Length: 170
Image (cartoon, rainbow, N blue to C red; front, side):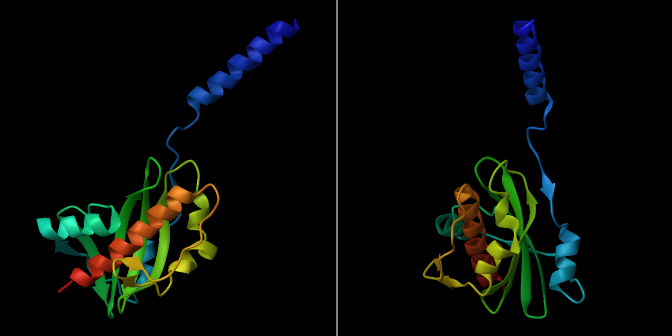
């Protein structure tokens, strides 16, 4: 009887694993809501077209290839970017606004990894406030979160990329 109960329990546990969602996606803030937080009147999106040299420079700086075009919003001396970076296995969608060459705000919009979600909290993202590029690096150290190292690094890469992209605007 006990052996039979253990088999049923093991079978039930296996079924739970098989039918649980593999790629969880936590949406914390939509792009329109993020833009509404950044601008009094949300401007229409614009497109920054990057040539091959710029793409290589972005890749060297941040480890992220922004592609040939990057959508952004700009008004009131501020630019805002929606950037996807890979954490461990899945993209993390970030909203990053830049004003006067410094990060005005960094927010996690969508988190898709199974671990490291703590990076979405303001206690962590506030570390990026007023950060700027200094010789291709952020001008400050960003504290790590145990168990979220890859997500922390992803946010740092995205912050560098957003600051660099802002410098490319005409």
